[in-house]
Length: 431
Image 1 (spheres, rainbow, N blue to C red):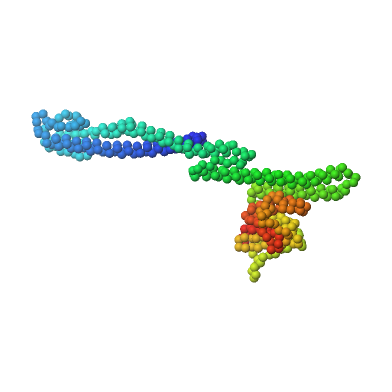
Image 2 (cartoon, rainbow, N blue to C red):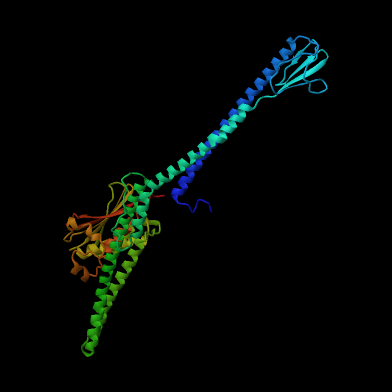
């Protein structure tokens, strides 16, 4: 694991800022020292070479004396004879010459060569090194500490809203999902984080309320047939000799079938709520409509939309045949429960969309209730729906299946006077 993995964001930001500044200062100081050393060393060598030339000129111009040539030279000058011995004076012999090459100058007096070595002075270089150690390094260390302290304060101030958000979010439970985290005024990343968390809490709150309502409605729907069965059996057992047992069993069987239908619908809704992707295969909606018409002859009429002079486009979509068949059955059953005479089902393929409409000539649904009927366990005519065997989940299941297949399901006024349920699904391209 990284040594920084256990640190807070504030500490990591401080270490990163201080380390970056320290690295930059060290890099700049290294480059500065190298440049100064190069320049000072080159200057010292040039001065030494000039000193060697000056000594050579003095040797050339000096007069001959009995004691030899007297040369005025700075410190750091060494004169050696041909045998390599250091001498303090030069013999008087004419014919001095200079041999260039470096900071040392070799001279020859007659046949006795002498070499003049001038040592470059490093005083300036030593002064620069001491200056860096005594002044620049402490100043750089102080700058790094200042940057670290400033970063610690600024990051702490910037993360203060995060601490408030975390504290508030920690106290939120499933019983108070109405609470929201504080949103800072600055429109930065923390502002967007708080907005996203509040939006997530809104969705959780709506989902929890929907779940609670669903559980309550499901309990109510399951309790009613169970209570009816129990009442019938208790009455039959109280008067066994005067009970029409076939009738009691028949009514109990009807309530049991209703229980089975509600349980099946609840299971399907749970799968749809889990956003499980339906199996993908080509499904011909016209074939599904034909099967529905055969199951209910005389009640369901099929109307195919076909352009004049052209072949009817294939009304094929991609999805689950079982779920789409359930969708069509729910729409057809809902229309047959409310129609007066017949139900008309039409299929039309238009460009990249397949439309399926189910029309009835019943009383219709007010525009204000057309969205509410898609809610679970919603009945506009509760008594008739219960008598006809509806569970109040048919349209809700149909709309969820349509959404799972990337389509829409809406209600409109039918040309027949009742309700038109319009399904629109993406058309599968023919291969």
